[in-house]
Image (cartoon, rainbow, N blue to C red):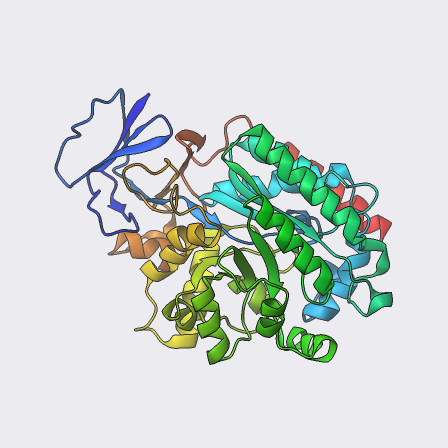
Length: 449
């Protein structure tokens, strides 16, 4: 099937190419961009009328914790900063089981798709005897939803008794972590589904040992996989690194062999100027998580400085217990507003925010050769937004309105050439049933704590 997505009211390709007449998709690939007023040179089977829609590349979510959708606005964790917030929630998350992982993954994916996301990365780092197969569940759910994903096998090995932050009940041995990590790397390689990748993601300096950081890096690189971790999210984390390792976070990163182009970091707030330059030279990527950073009062990521140094910057909704949602287009607006507050109105545009959420995010997770922008040869990952809500009435610039007026739901979403959202709904998904099952799982989890 070859489809002409025709005459969108506005289109942003991410690369300054003219596609005001729309795009032609054949199979899973973009095969032609149509300038304004022109006809396709390609033969096509179907016209999709986009005259009332804004067309942008599918959004990329670089950092998330699906399971945390089960503990949104959790009473014991309200009004706390990161370390206190984590201490309040670790005992709750320790009660996760396979049913909870399944329904939380399914709900998070639905939220992301309905908000225009076509590529997601999730960081699942909490395991117990009931959820050894959490990443396997996530793989199955992403395939079921037709979502493009980089799923990270997270880990925690430094428990409270050894000087870390998490309780000992939610940490694993290095041997168990590495064995499971290698099993998953082999599984994804052998399945050959290019839409699903696995990366390795020791959680943070305060929850894993340097030895696990080094071993995880060696294992990931032997399979050509990426590496991910939280870093420089708060001043408390910086103080922890100095006290325990005698090093600031970037120096620690270099010591354990992670200052390299196959690494991306979540948050990346508290870097000094020299460290930002080192990150850029190394080719590091950073996922900016504006909503989470505001909710936990962590600080403001220096996005403009990072990009100027050569760091790839994307956006992440982060955990739904610190956001407290999984809405990617709303995160675009949050990033836009927070960075304007940081740098001034003339220094950050709505197109900057869209760039972070698309090609920037694709670069961060190593997918920019196949997705993140609208151009010939790339995969057909496309989001189309209607501007028919009251919030858009009176808007003079349709593309700017998407960000400034606060779009919150996609009208149509194409992932790898397949329609995954039509007219604001996910075909075949009973949203009301999913909502009920998810709430029941959240209630069970809270009752166990």
